[in-house]
Image (cartoon, rainbow, N blue to C red; front, side, top):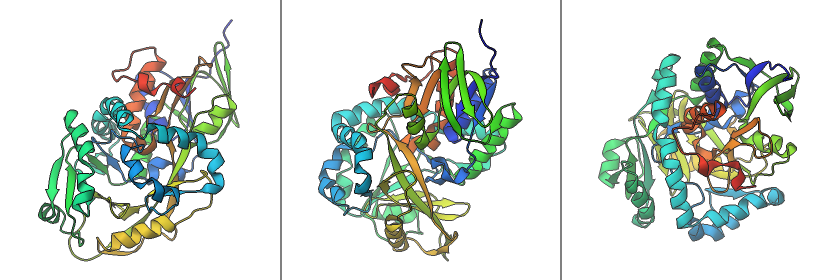
Length: 416
């Protein structure tokens, strides 16, 4: 005889992926409980650039990595810092990452990610309209800027692949860039405008609006950590301060998913890609109207409700290591040469960790050895963008419906 369950679905993780899964499950008539530690600032979706990019079909493992490999290896590039004291913890990830840094792997990833990101902005628009948060979204595009003709020429393969998937890009000269963004003081040789890309002006506020919608629609939020997940033939038990029996469990805890998965016997080659940001007041004169990525300066600048958000490069370090702000300090110096920035808004910078897989693809699918457990993590730099899309996919899998978007390339067993 089956034991009764307290909820059809229990979700471990309260970031954009977890809350989106919860909303999609409620839409399908399932009862949902969501376990969330409650620290909004530690979520990767809280601290990113807010871009919902149609062009985000490329993993970080790029064939261009080899051009700067020596600089990356000796920590001479502002775009990447490796904490060698913890190298033993990320070596499985790094080994597979280097194996994936080739043109054929890049093209395979683009083919799988294209349908995944194609509907991202539309899904956000749908959810935001339901919770009165449409004012936080804008379809204003973003710009990738190059300081030299040589660095622009190196983006040819990227532009070719984008064209193969009919992703709109506008090639900009220096005069075009100045006309579009008079706030830029620096002269750039060339740029790429992604006109189909949306922007979230306050990712934290958007997630709060989705959380409110989840509770209003009958979802149950439990603000606590999960100690363990136990799988039985007829469901799972969540061990926490408030334990629960669930028919199915979804592990969607971002950079914290790896530790929980390991306790269940799954050793994924995961890394925490740490990033930093800080907001600055806007100076006099023209205002920045869209997100920019200064390739040569290794920083991103995004206009937010709180001010101009300056974001650093990638730091490969333990998730909870003490902050190391050298990359952000570099980013701020470079950004001040490009934009008229005032003083910092916060006393301390934000630091968070993206859950990164070596091939740049998320892990979405049923756990091979636990039939009532489903994985949904490892979204890297596109978690905020594709959270609502992941929600639709996972909810369909839970009710044994074939998702509208192919997910075979995201299967967990590709690493196992």
